[in-house]
Length: 271
DNA sequence: CTTTGCACCTGTTGGC
DNA sequence: TGCCAACAGGTGCAAA
Image 1 (tube, rainbow, N blue to C red):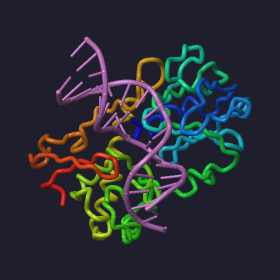
Image 2 (image 1 turned 90 degrees about the vertical axis):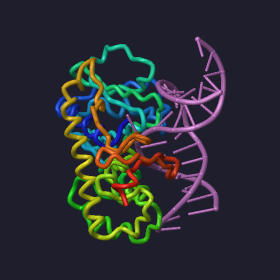
Image 3 (image 1 turned 180 degrees about the vertical axis):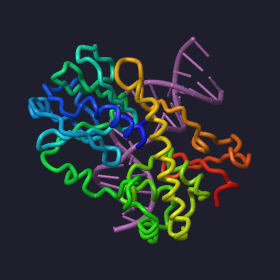
Image 4 (image 1 turned 60 degrees about the horizontal axis):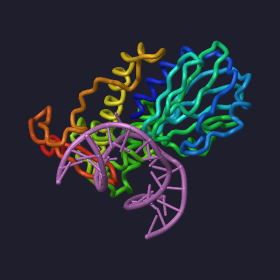
């Protein structure tokens, strides 16, 4: 479920409630995520105050004192803020307990997510240190993409999903951004002109920003018992639409397989 | 260095 | 209705 817009929506939903809160502890119900949740975590967190929340790629960073709690939602993770006494359900693996009686609860059926602790500056954590630029910030631009693609003969879709080139472009938005840019996913990356790089940078930004704006409208549901962030009522232009007519030209949307992932494109609009 | 394929899991879907 | 294979929004890592 979580692509970058869902992670950003989660961050924005949580941040106002967490900033300044004291942590009273943590509950590890099942430590077996992508990496084990450190057993020392409850003791490490107890008594710390949350300074701020950040996002880097799809990692959620909760700054507490001189360290950072790193969270990743993997493929099926979600976070909710609820009263700590709320009974945990089947896939609720981890709670961060707050002094006000609330808990941040991680649910993750597939357990591809992560809960890790880092002492000191989060950007030096091995998982974050080698990451490329954020797609919505200035340093991701046409020049950067052009240079990053020159020596890559692999399909452009796999290159924009490479987190050393740019972070946060997941499988759905890769297809969507390429459609908007009029670029076929299987085109060799090094055959992109500077102008097409510029266009692609623009559509990646636009696609993600629109999805984040959509997610913003579901923030209301974030806290409490009802809602589930990530329920954007999105109309994808190509993703998941194989066999259906292109919304722009009516041609039949095609699907192909690239590196074990599905890609979707319009054979007429994309060259 | 780049590129490829696997691994980690559970839940849902579609075909027979 | 049941069963089984294929697939699902991520991504680090080993091997080529």
